Image (tube, helix red, strand yellow):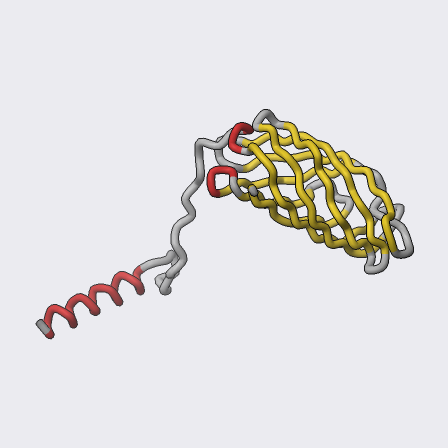
Length: 162
């Protein structure tokens, strides 16, 4: 019995040390590509969190956004609303609509057309603009990652189906 335990441990160590291209130990699981996603994978109401740094002609600073939107399963985002703290002092309400396209691999793109209104504080809000994101879905469309890809700032975050 003791011999079997030692043999099992020796084989396990040998397997671990032979993993990886440089002969080192690798405990990182392989990446498995997702498949079977489409626009229809995104349906219903999602809560959304975004954070950013902003550097454009109208304003510089950072923002923190929380809100929600509805995905219709056909590539449209509606009823989007975000409460945003912009550059630390301005509290703004952003409304948005948009579109998305999700590939079978769970990656895709989204475009949001925003309208911003100062609701409290001082300063300026994010300008009304069109934002473009790379998106990645998970959990059969129940979760999304957003990463701004239009070059106007660094806006990233996540959404979770409610």
